[in-house]
Length: 165
Image (cartoon, rainbow, N blue to C red; front, side, top):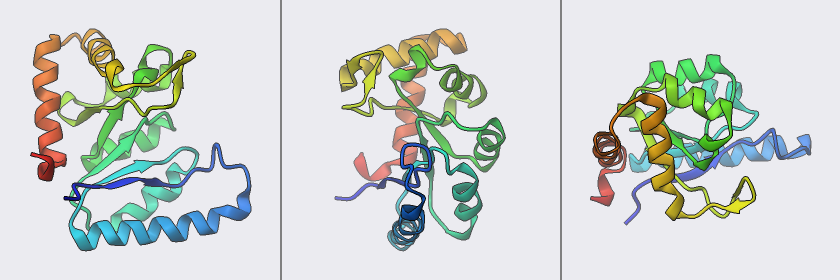
């Protein structure tokens, strides 16, 4: 059973070959259309292409949008918050000021957790076991009891990905 489309998106940060950008966009448009047709939420990678992606999204009727590991410009973070997007937080919260800023700005009812493995965080390969550390870091940063935050994030997950439950 399919519960979401993603991780999909555009990468203009790690992908340096600009000749690939039109192909990336074409594939991304097809994935957004698929999500719209299937009425599924999307999990988006926006690194370095925030403007293009945030300009594209209103053209699609997608039930819910999660922005994965957001560390981009603050103005697009604000737009995403205003539009009601979710933001998934990775173990990068332990060292990234941009990720911590995302956590501080996004209301707890629009936060999700992820490991994004096998990416390395401070030399350690990301695993699902790190998610509890992410939860605790968010709890401390937002001054919200860990259990309360865990319950809220479970509810958020049920809301954005109802087909899982």
